[in-house]
Image 1 (spheres, rainbow, N blue to C red):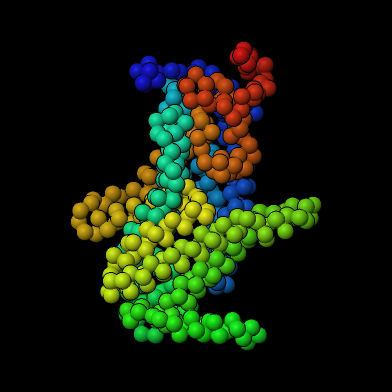
Image 2 (cartoon, rainbow, N blue to C red):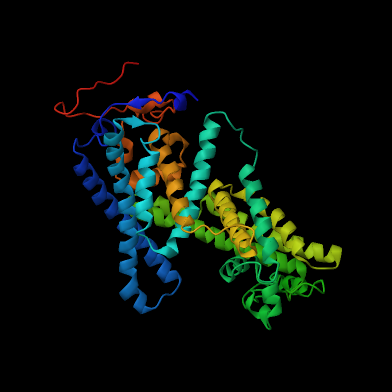
Length: 447
C-alpha cells in the first residue's frame, strides 16, 4: 500500500531505462518500428498464407486480399510496439520521471488503443479474447508470486471442464450456439449429439459414423468391427453404429488428429535447423507431446460420447443436461495435456458467449467498442508485466516479445526499476547497459 500512498518516482532518463542502445528517443522508436515490421510481416505472411491454403481460398483472395491483409496486420503490430516506446518517453517528459503506472501500463494502454483501431474489425474481437486470457494469466501469476493466492491442484483442468460443460449444454439445445461454433464442436465430438444435425435429413451420412472397411485388413479385425457395428444402440442415439464402436471411433479419430497437429507444429518450428540437426525430424515426429495432445483430444471425444450414451441408457431419455454433464466429464481429459492457455481461452470465449446471450435476453447492456477497450487494457497489463516483472509473464509470450523486437525488450535497465518492489531484474540480475558517457554517467548499484 505504501506504493500508492507515497508514489515512488525514478528520475533516470528514458535512455538510461528504456532504450539504452541509443540516447535519442525518435531514433529508438524508428529502430523498433523497422524491426517489428520485419518480424510482423514474416509472422502474418506465413500465418495468413497457411490459413488461406487450409480454407481453400480462391485465386482472387491470393491476388487481391492476402497482401493487403498481411500489411494491415503488420502495421497494426508495428504501431503497437513503436507507440509503446514513444509514449514511454512522452509520459516521462510530461510527468518528470517514471512512476509505477506510467513506466509501462499507461504507455502500453495508449499505444494499444491507437494500434487496434488500425486492425480489421473482424480481428479485434479475436485479439481482445486472446489478450484477455493472457492478462488474466499474468494477473494470476503476479498474485501467486506475491503469495496472495495459492495454486489449485489441477485448477486449469477444472476451469476447462466447467467451460466445456457450459458450451456443450448449449450445444445440445436448438439454436443454443452460433453455427460456426456448432461446426467446430461437431468436428471434435461428431454431429450425432447435436439436435441441429439430428433434425436435418440424412445427417448421419456426414458425421463420420459409417464403419470404414479395410480391403486389405485382417479378417479378424473386420469381424470384430462388424460385431461392434451391429452392437446395442439405444433407440434415442442418433449414430448408426453400436454405442461401443461409436465411442471408439471418436477416440482414434481425434487421437490421430491431435498427434498430427502437434507433430506438424514441432516440424515447422524445426525446419530451419533440420539441415544441421537431422535428428530433429525424428524428435518432431515421435515426441511425447504428440501422444499427449492426441490422448487429450481422443479421450475428450470418447468420454463425451460415452457419457451421453450411458445417460440415454440409464435415464431412457435425452436432454441438454446430458451435454452439461458429458462436457464436464470430458474436460478432465486435459489431465493428459495440461494447458493454462487453452483453459483460459476456452473460459474467456465462454464468458463472451454468455455476455452476448445476456445482451440478447435484455439482461446486460451492449458496450460499444468493448473489444477495443478490452484489448487496450489487457495489452497494458501484459506490457506492464513485461517491463516490471517479466518473470510473471507467460513464457511463450515473453519469447514472442523478445523475438519480435530482436531482444530490445531484454535491454531495458530493470535494475533501476527494482525500487518499485516488483523484483524487476530477477531474470536479468547482472545486466547493465554500456552507456555513452556524453549522455549518462550512472554506474551499476553496489550489491
